[in-house]
Length: 215
Image (cartoon, rainbow, N blue to C red; front, side, top):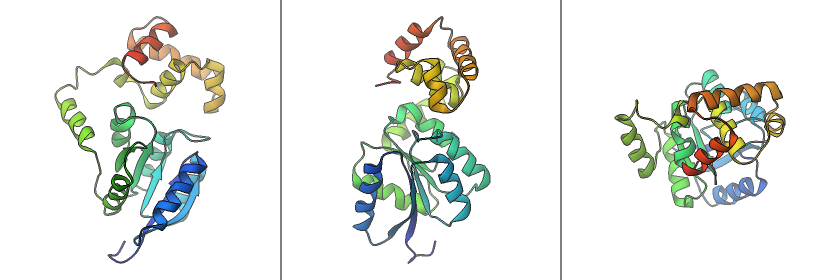
């Protein structure tokens, strides 16, 4: 991106109202343009392969794939891609996972428009963007690598399954939502319980609520 070239945005969000809001926001700037939008993780990957962009604004919850998985695949194919996670999930739920997966930054949808525009501009230059709250969380984690909460040992897919179970979804519902087999989700559930030393869904749900992993 040259100094005078616009920041080319790809918007990936499953809510039409968010995409429309981004269009209105970007229309009020002089240095940004939206080159593509979608609610699909699969289409986001295709866009990343086929068109030049400065920043992809990527949600975690999409119609067909988990945003963290989309992030990982794009970064595998395009390591220099600038991807800013923009999600309804709080920073303490997914931010560190997203950064470890290659995200250039993480913002909650509770942020101000000023913070969002600042984050986009900063990420477009190739820099990382993190909020002061997330910076503090990262600093706190430096000396707690061996003292992390049990859920931090879970893979991204296991963590997603945990939050869905804790939200009241059945194994069959989760399998349908994630386009996976019931057997696969059951295996995830078993691994979650084993890693976290829990006995059943009730304990898992209690843990998730206590640690504010679900709303």
